[in-house]
Length: 219
Ligand SMILES: O=C(CO)COP(=O)(O)O
Image (cartoon, rainbow, N blue to C red; front, side, top):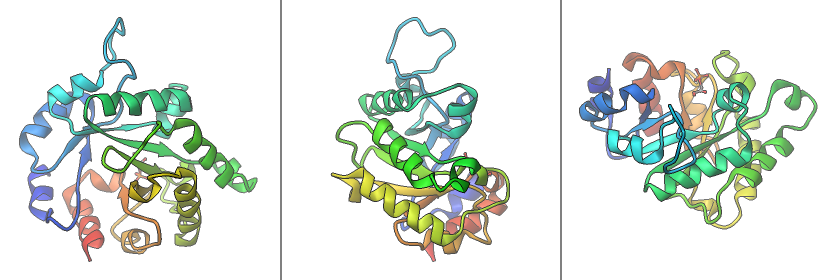
């Protein structure tokens, strides 16, 4: 799959794949594009048995890591402060951070989506965040792995709110949309205002489903 994806990469689209920690080394040896981790620990060293630091993923060949994925915020109880610490650790290691934010269905139905997400941004964004080392992924929790994709209008409204919340350097930071992105809906989402890319889950698992999304980003 990595070879097929690599063959589809051109210099007009940036493609990167985040993999489980045990696969970083073999994937980075093989892939012709950046490989990243799905999480890192916030500390550079210390007594954290079983945790994986930014320097450890770097040594294994990672160029970046996702931080603050909603599954980690929910299942591991990660707070915005934890997520900020992880993004800062990546910066210290010279790696890129993809920082995830997103609201629950309950919060969206209560009309709180933008307030929740912009509060997450304010609390988890490191000082001096800039596009050369950080991207934001907006992933509405109700859209992840459910087949329920946000509308282009909702994504544009949220990304405009995020862009504003980012403040200084905000224009340099890439805003990715994630949640049930497929070959069918990718073009509309990727060409929406303030959408600079996608964080693709299920449809990235096979080259056959992922390559059309790369092509939609290019087209
Ligand atoms: O959260 C996601 C990737 O981590 C999105 O997953 P899906 O694209 O499968 O909805």
